Amino acid sequence: NLDYSHFPLSADESDTIDTIISADASCDITVAPTHHIDADGVLHGFRVAYPQHTSDVLLPISREMFFGHTIVEAGTSTTVNEDVMRLAANPEECRRLMRELLAEIDAASSGHEPGLHCVPQNVQSWDASR
Image (cartoon, rainbow, N blue to C red; front, side, top):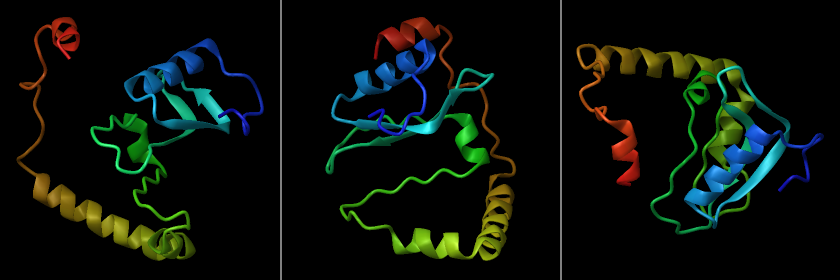
């Protein structure tokens, strides 16, 4: 859906969206006016919605999504989630709670840092087997 896009998609943006759709043709992608590909080649400014009761969804998540505001909501209601509105209404409290959560995660994850042992030696053959 390009209804909100103020300018045409670049070839890279179009290719990225085609790739997302090829993983699940039932998804609906809405492109925001802010759509762009950043310096790292990551597409920003889009919304992906999947039909209710969709299983085995491959969410298009990038590393940068954890450094800003990303909202993922699953449910059957067409109204705005009350918890989302509560958090948005009190940003200072939200920041405080988020700092507490991050401190808890940091403390619990100490000594459990990820390694590279799970990365396949030959990525191309692993990808082809999927």
